Length: 134
Image (tube, rainbow, N blue to C red; front, top):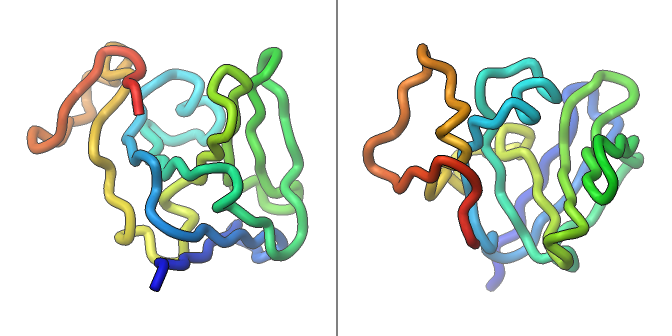
């Protein structure tokens, strides 16, 4: 039986469902993630696009640059999703917005070259100064 997990925004206006296992999970330290969330880091679960379904409401999409889309709740501002045209067929969800964020722990840390000096990295996972394949 395939794993099914759900998540959504803080106010409940937008809900999503993911099916199966993620293609990758990561903990990102990039400045874009910081600025889009107001948090020092952001964890992602990356799924094949056909494994992510919006089941209630609809995220508002903000294109930060050509081909880069962030989905968030227009009511409460929760950052929910990310897509990039240069990585077709994949759809990221913010791990912390899952009803059970423990389901998909980060398998790697990315953009550690932009990590804030006061954030400690997990020594048990691989680190990449920029992005990582997968």
